[in-house]
Image (cartoon, rainbow over all chains, first blue to last red):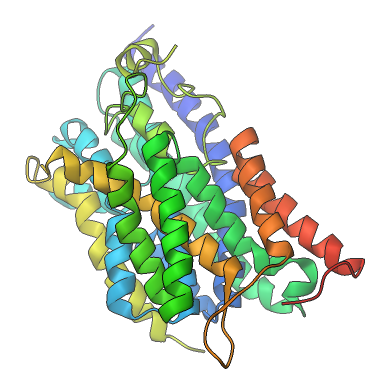
Amino acid sequence: MTAEAQVASSRRELAVGALGIGFSAAGFGFVYGLAARDAGFSPIEAAAMSTLVFGGASQFAAVGYVASGLAWPGILLLTALLNARHLLYSAALAPWLAGIPRVRRALMAHLLTDEAFALSIAHFGRLGRTDERGYWIAAIASTFIPWNVATLLGATVGGQIPDPTRFGLDVVFPAAMVGLAVGLVTGRRELVAAISGAILGVGTGLAVGTGIGVIVGGLVGPLIGLAVPRRADEAATALGTPASAERYSMPGAHVADRPGALLDQADRDQAGLP
Amino acid sequence: MSIELVSLAVLMFLVTYPSRALPILAPGLERLPPIAFEYLRLVGPAVLAALAATAVMVVSSEGGPQFHVGIEWLAVAVSAGLTAWRRNLFVGMLAAVALVALARLFGLVGYP
């Protein structure tokens, strides 16, 4: 197979993955728009979040923070912590992107998501070299466009729904939050951190308010999780690898619903997947 | 139309972008102790679980925050279970919404 044919073949595979993720991102973005509107965000505010922050879990969380009246410094602290996982993806991509001009790398960094990372690093791995256009396809087509368009639709069309509680839409936010949390629980430590965070959040929330409760749960819960010894058969997935992207990205936004679907055999061997 | 939260979005961008850009633009600067990475990894489940739990268990009232028990608990539990089983967030969310909507439609539970 010629180099051009190999690139074309890998891009086709990338596009198919991007299409599946795009549908999921659109649906999830629409629900985010609805939730943001329900929390009092205007369409411009909801859209600004999706364009500038461009991080699903942190945006959903921000809706909850704003609704609970949490002060902005607290929101920013939790946002920074929640989005710190991008550091891992960025570090893993850095060697692949080193030859690209700095300005374009700066823009590529803003579009880096769980999904863009998973798609693009698998694509680079298949090719054995960087394909900048492949990265743009992974980042823009799979997530940025569908997420932002759907957010705007949800934030505007949502206003036509007369009584959201009648349709159960008031549980969209907690259902989304718990679903995202479930997707991140891959071992005992994560489970203990989640349960501790929930208990501390509710306890502190009842005592002094939900905004503070979320901060206490979010910051102290992980400390309790860290105290749990890791089982021998629970080896951590190497951070910054395609396997870690699959492991930590949002459920429902995966290219496929089985671990290792994005990976070639070398990646699977490295990550210890069958 | 309100634009006050656009400022918040800008600030959230400013605290998010370094995580995305630092290793790509300045390789090597991102090194943190493993325990810090492990802590950051656990923040996600803890924050999201705290948000979900406070959203369904704590309600505001004139006398301050109150403990709340309702159909929302069941809906969130169903969402968690289905998401874990099917590995699909949408399925869980749809089931939660449908459960609450049907329960209210048939008058089995009240409105929040």
